[in-house]
Length: 215
Image (cartoon, rainbow, N blue to C red; front, side, top):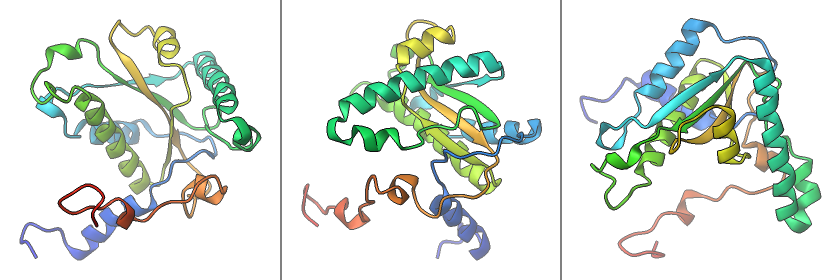
C-alpha cells in the first residue's frame, strides 16, 4: 500500500460516503447552519476543473416566493416529461421528483458565462466545463452525506426559463436545482430502484478492456 494512503478508518469513511450518497427527495425542513453551509460550498469549490477555469456558480435561493416559482417550473417540466414517456406516464407521475418545498436550502448550480474564452482542455471537448461543474456538485453531495444532510439533484426544468427567472447573463446556464437539508433517513438504495422504476446495472456491464464491448 502506498505510504500516501489514508488510515483504514479514513478510507472507510470515504468509501462509506460514496456508497451511502443518495439522490434525496424527502426532507424534514429544519435548517443548515451558516458555518456548515459555508463548509459544504467550500468543498464544492475545491473540485477539479479543466484549465482551472472554475466554471461553477451557485445561487442560494432565500426568497420563499422565488422558491415557489422555481418549483412551478419543475412541475411544468414534470408534466411535459410524463407526456413524453408515453405508456409510463402514469407511473412517472406517482414518483416524487423533488423536495423544493420541504428542504432547508435550495441552491441553483450553473455554468458561468463567457466560457468560450477558456480553451485549455476544451478545444476538442468543450463539454469539460459541464464535467467540472458536475465534479463540484459531487463534492458537495459527498460532503453533505458526511455531515448527515441529504441532497437531491433536480434536473426537471427548462434551462432558459430558469436562467431568466434568476437574472443570469447570456451564456450562463443552470444545470441543477439542489435541494439540501436534514432528512428522516437515507434511502437504503437509490429511490428509483426502490420504486421499481429502474434496476441498477453492475460495474461489469460498463467495464471493457482494450476495445469497446470487450470484457
